[in-house]
Length: 132
Ligand SMILES: Nc1ncnc2c1ncn2[C@@H]1O[C@H](COP(=O)(O)OP(=O)(O)O)[C@@H](O)[C@H]1O
Ligand SMILES: [Mg+2]
Image (cartoon, rainbow, N blue to C red; front, side, top):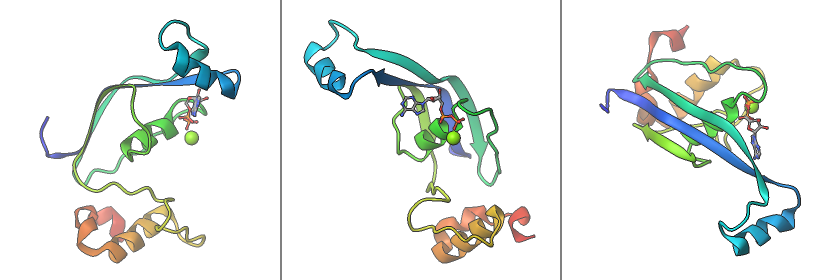
């Protein structure tokens, strides 16, 4: 995998363990692999894509299709169950603490303002479509 890419996602999967009762989570720790007290919910399976440096990509899908899960994995707030995630550079979630939400601004304008306040860290986002 080359570093011309900002994001490289290779065959990732995410499985959530859903327990009926919170106490089952503790019981599962004691049981180990002997018995499953949880239901498996696969939010993502076999997701593969690459995003080049400077490329803008949108993720669309129905409710529950795994968009938020995918973004949480990319921003490293959640660990994938399987697969490979390679991030080349700094990742920032627009609604993260510190970025702030500017009600009167559109997404592209907010990105621009964030870029300005971070200076050289965000230089790689200096593309034409952001200027308009
Ligand atoms: N913390 C969680 N525990 C269990 N299931 C979850 C959890 N988060 C998401 N899911 C499930 O994973 C699937 C994908 O959810 P999500 O990534 O939120 O989709 P989207 O953002 O596209 O609406 C859904 O079936 C959802 O119910
Ligand atoms: Mg979502």
